[in-house]
Image (tube, rainbow, N blue to C red; front, side, top):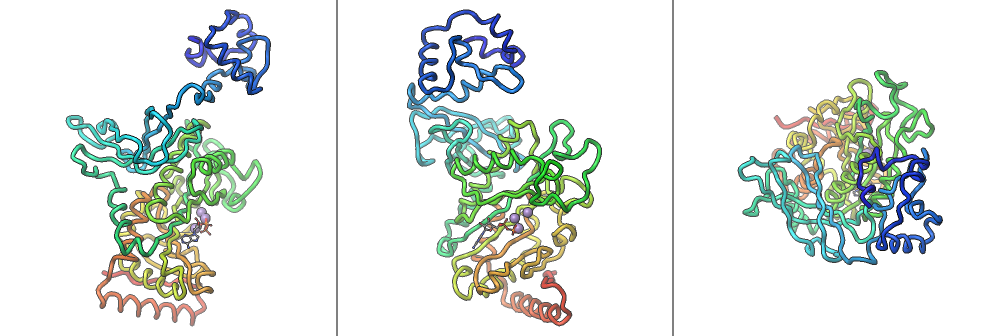
Length: 450
Ligand code: ADP
Ligand code: MN
Ligand code: MN
Ligand code: MN
């Protein structure tokens, strides 16, 4: 078995070399393994080593793949749990593996764990222990079987959430009785960019150059328009397998850029699902040798940035006369614009320029069916008098714990002063009338509180 553990240059041998090199018989343990595999009808051959081998396109033999795909269930009840957490930058994901005695169904069945926070930029070296609390589990699409991915958040030894743990505060908002009663739904559109590994230039773009201008790429097909579909598609299936509430995917306006949607999810689940889907994407791109970027404006110039539109509704918004509740929430959102913007992702000012389907970061606007506004209300919502709204401001690198909790807080828990509310409402209706009179597109700019 030793040769299987050898470095890649040794185990990736040409078939001819394998024939001449490995003529020693297998051990008895190994042949029982081969027998089992043979029974499943996967491979047949008279040569024992060939039985284990998978033939790849370039005629090299990769027996690691066999080991990765080993079904261990006949031999052990143990499973592998991949503990996942957010690192010090607030967007990097870290993970490590641990054996659990038997399959589990709930995060409370697996132990808390710890990691070295000084190596993730989250503590000083002196007191480096950070504790992981399992919060949500998903099926592991990489290991298969009963193995799991575990979304955790991070605490000090005393049980205090560390500063980068945004889940803790979000869980408080989502456990507020008023918020629970409003059953908040979130549908998050996660955009991302794929980059060529060594040059960090978008996938499909000529090295040192640019592709033709935007236009043909959005939802495009064809070798000159769609770059990285296998990654997007592999991710889609892996997410469905994992139990993530992924609802769709599409190619984006900038070539090499993609989007997938998660939701509608209730409360904190939206953010747990987004973080797990990001982790899976990062693992798939790792395998594909492509770099994943959540930068809100990966390429300067006339190229769309990457956002994380957050669609949101409460029970009252989804019920009759919900449109009035939506408009009231929009007034609250306008009054807290600056607070929201500061929590909507690093570098978002490079994306929210007022061009490329965005509003300028310093203005707040809303409108029906208008993609140039901060908040968009769908035509169906206006027509039905109920539904949801889309906050188009969050950047692709936003923390969904922060954004979903803030949306719930501002629209369900927060109350403006009566004076501020009256002013904003008057201001909004004046602007709406003016827009209507001049035949301007239905985007209503609301003056921000000074
Ligand atoms: P866009 O037209 O902006 O590209 P998408 O189809 O990409 O929109 O995403 C819309 C998202 O809104 C989906 O994730 C969907 O699940 C979500 N959604 C639909 N209805 C609601 C609702 N009532 N409340 C919250 N989110 C919703
Ligand atoms: Mn979309
Ligand atoms: Mn999009
Ligand atoms: Mn959208």
